[in-house]
Length: 111
Length: 113
Image (tube, rainbow over all chains, first blue to last red; front, side, top):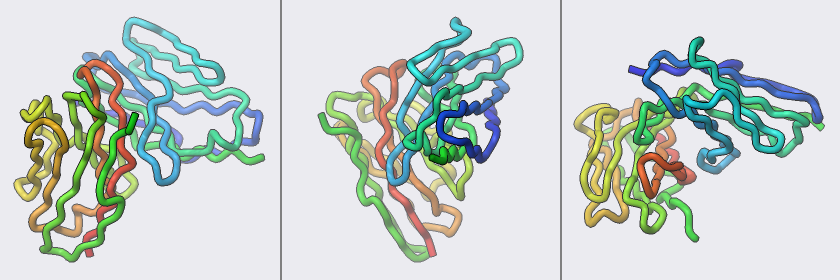
């Protein structure tokens, strides 16, 4: 079955810096790659996603890139702000929202 | 519009007891999912309902776990009898279409002592 690895497990940056979180997946049949942000006491919230027919997608300060050949995808957050502090999860899906998640990255943005 | 709601938010039970978690999906969402995050590890899929039918229950750990969705509305996840390794955060999610975004509830933190 699908296996998703996520790095780093923790990431500390200064406000205004960029943050990059990387994930790899094993199943070449996976075709949907969402990223979730989980704030304290809340459930995971979708922040951006990408499908396998696209290499890059951007939404304001966040972007996701996908390399199907290498089976890896990354989340890029630019101009980080303290409110970006949270746990971020990547996931892969072969269809029907049976998501396989990474282990999560705790991002801390210091003012 | 109300989001996905889960009850209770926290539950502490003794080993061997029974616990029932409840999930109210977003109104009109036919697809309902249960996930679990144990000990800070990855969030793992448990099962998927389409209306009242179990579409995929391949992630259910063992027969101590029973999920139901009577009438295709809210769902319950019962753990009987609970074991220490069942501790974790149980998430419910729902989507209107299985190929659309799934919205997650805030989770139920289950602690078995």
